[in-house]
Image (tube, rainbow over all chains, first blue to last red; front, side, top):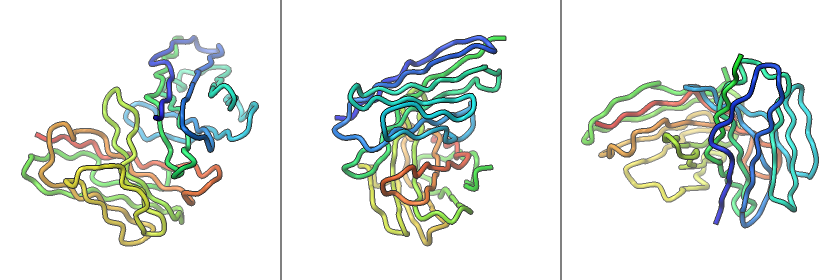
Length: 110
Length: 115
């Protein structure tokens, strides 16, 4: 079966750094996505990893370890607008479907 | 604005009604998707269309009927829904469905309430 786990909620302070973890157990793997979703809004694409290692994009970085079935999203210099849900999603190579985790709701405190 | 629009944004319907959700993408993409997002559950893929052809029907009940007349438009026809079908219905598009970083662009969603 397919299973994607990420923490339900996290809290961090403005200006700090936070790491959101995602572990997956899938029958195959063909890429991992991170999306951001503000309350009442559509998800927006943040990053894509298909090879091991760190991908950096401004304040956001995403890391992947395929052997461990593990990824994290790192957010630096947190801003209040970063309060949102962060969705981890894995592409299944059997049919190229993208399977989403339940999301991590991140609260930023001033 | 993501280039994907959905109408209506909110819909309340009775269990005997028939309604349709509309999605339009202005990005020149070839693939379009319907997702269901319920509280405290992950996004659930419902249907995938690539070049107007349905490539995925994720065991969705027949009371949901998709239609894709062209690569830019996608409909979801609803009839005899159940209260548990109340959710946010999201449309998305991507350049293609094959391998690669084909990120999906989501519309704002239709908040559906079935009474």
